[in-house]
Image (cartoon, rainbow, N blue to C red; front, side):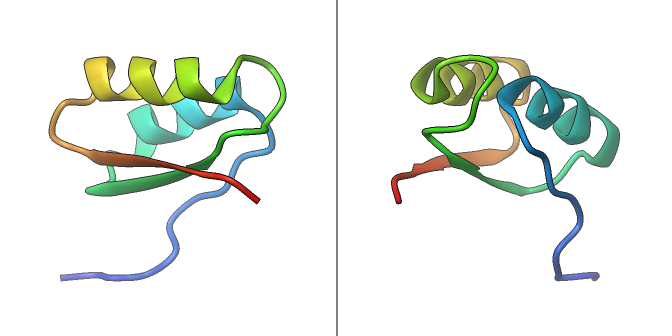
Length: 59
């Protein structure tokens, strides 16, 4: 099983695309990313990718 860094994104809209393409088990997302409210992005990712563990981070 591969465990490592698989993707990166600069805004919430790219995050959705990356998660769709890579199908990761875990997603860590910065709440302050541009493009869409981070909390909204986390909620959307949870809904669209229920098998992924999605967590929002504050810096």
